[in-house]
Length: 309
Image 1: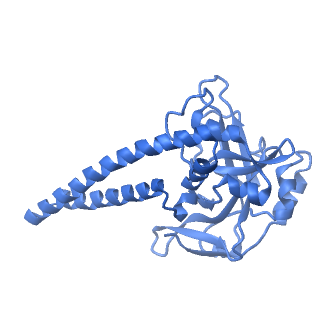
Image 2 (image 1 turned 90 degrees about the vertical axis):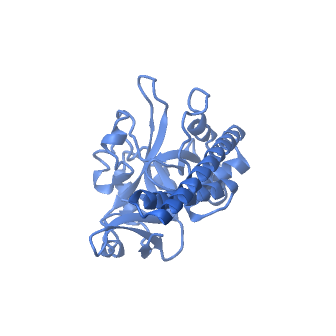
């Protein structure tokens, strides 16, 4: 179902490699909202995308990210102090007497110290692959065509179709996956109308391991080429005007490639060929057969897999 992906998060990559322009409004509204005020909670955006904004703008979004970074550094610094004290207290208690509470304090405190350090390193500019990782609910640059131009919009990975109530996010948490066999059913309002592309290097799936426990597998094309993942997207608006607008998308999945099925998963993203890019992004709703033909002519790189780190 592509529950997670390692994506091209920088809009400058889309500009350079796909001749796209930035839809500045979608970036600004993700952070500032429709009323021109900062959103109440920091949106979940890959750090690679935020670093790109910090360097290239829009300036009002970059400034807001800097403010959030400063506040988060203060919070993390306090968290480090508190958790280091927790670990030290737990270690002293263990020297006197082994108890579950003391052991838990050392274990949990150490994990929280390490997590805080990693986040501080990220804010300070230390790059890692995790800076490009998305999950359902995280925003991601998506390539579309509007007004005859390739544009990059910032959208949430988990689609809320226009006209559906906002509680669909909770009722249908799997709407980051648009199954090919349901495109003319649940997704009929988007298929043939609003198409996008997510550019990704790898995708991740949950599978059952040999011992029955859950494992996360990382799949990567043996060719090393970026995947052009076919997506559907929607611009949701609240008819009552009480909730902010939402741009969101879902990755289309098909029957699994043989090597993906052999690894234990039953779906694979649709990785379209570059020569079909504009045809996919400018669909004709009266000719759905042409869109299915793009799927049938998709790329079939061998997807090597490994346990995700």
